[in-house]
Amino acid sequence: MPDRKMFWRIIRRLLAANRGRLFVILLALGAGAAITAALLNLQVDAKRRLTTEFRAFGPNVVIVPKDSSLSTSGTLPESAARSVPIHLPTGSVTLSSALYVIATVSVAPSGKPVSAVIRGSSPFAVVSVLLRSSSTAAANSGEANQPAENACVVGVRVAQQLNAQQNTQLVLANGKRHESCHVVSFQKTGGPEDDQITIDLRAAQRLVGLPDRISVIELRVPGAPSAIETLIADLERRIPEANVRPVRQFTEGEAKIYNRISRILSYTVVLVLVLTALCVMAAMTNVAMERRNDVGLMKAIGGATRRVLRLFLAEAALLGLTGGILGAAVGILLSMWLGKAVFGIAARPRLIVYPVAVALTIIVAIAGAFPLRRLANIRPAAVFRGET
Image (cartoon, rainbow, N blue to C red; front, side):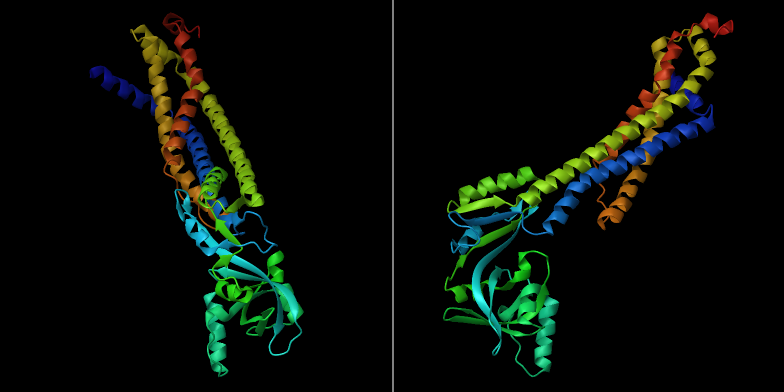
């Protein structure tokens, strides 16, 4: 117990010997810990953010009939959608069913017919504000409110061909079957959706005469590509009459982007830690020069070399712990600000990042104390004679 008390008393005296140098070392360690924690937190949070951003582009898995493509008349039973697991360990799966029909479209009552692709969708994702506004406009004009099933979203290129406006009544014809809908919104994506008219799935099924049939099931699956591949293999067993295909440009693109971001952040963390260690090492070299007399005196009164080195390593570890605790906290806050600036949403603080950043800072501080090992070779007699 007396040895332990003396040990910590010497540590306190060593830390207080030169406050200016102590501040410089803590500043270097704290800055390194802050940048390390910020980059590690962004690296962990990047996977979640990239997954969210890519899902906004559309589905990343599609389920289609086995012997058909989206351009043929092959269909699946609507009940196949119930075989898809909605809740996964990586998050919830967003599912939508669609039926594609080629039909002629005209503006009621006697507009010029135009051939277009009709997409029956379930759920029929129409902005509620637009539905309410169109219903309000119809009520103000004395017309009866139309149900949501009679609403449709029109691609901009089809709308130009039809010269359709908001609340325009459209007539959809497929042989002898007819359906009508009113325009509640326009869609502009720069893709094939601009040439389509989206209506409710039930209306599309009546138009083509295929009740309870669908052309495709579209899934937005969260998680890494490996988790998506696992779900695809499971769905192929659950729905043997269908082909389950990943949308490669999304799944592979997401994996490539995340791997590149992860590598860049990892290399940057390593570079920051190396630079921090060099800064600490430069400061510790001066410390080693100043403490020769102290070490010579310790060894002269019987202090073992291992115990002397333990004193200085404990000092470095305490500096690393202090700098890591303070710097990692600042780094977590910094990563939240960077996430807000880059993704528009603050990065979530990950608890695992904090102890990892603190541990790395302690390791860097101990590695930076390498010059203090030179003190082990000091001979007390040479110190007292002024030879070193």
